[in-house]
Image (cartoon, rainbow, N blue to C red; front, side, top):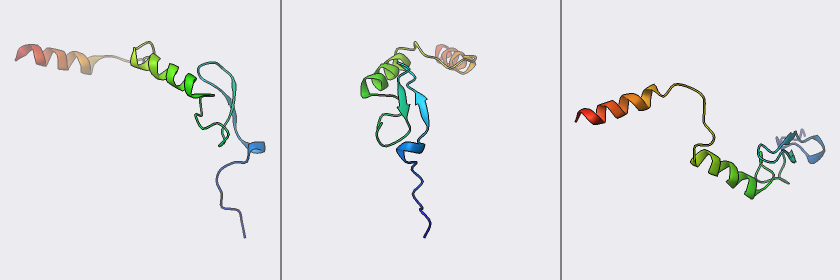
Length: 73
């Protein structure tokens, strides 16, 4: 009977770097905070997004339209 488990074993797990500290992270159950290496790195990244240090590039047309609409009323 074929193995239906889709989770890779640690020996074949994808290896990547933590987006925050660049430490080695395996995409496996051994790293529950993946793609981060730890809860600390995960929370630091979240804080950067919450404080708007991280942003997605693009135009803020939608925000400008909403701001103008509010001023009219």
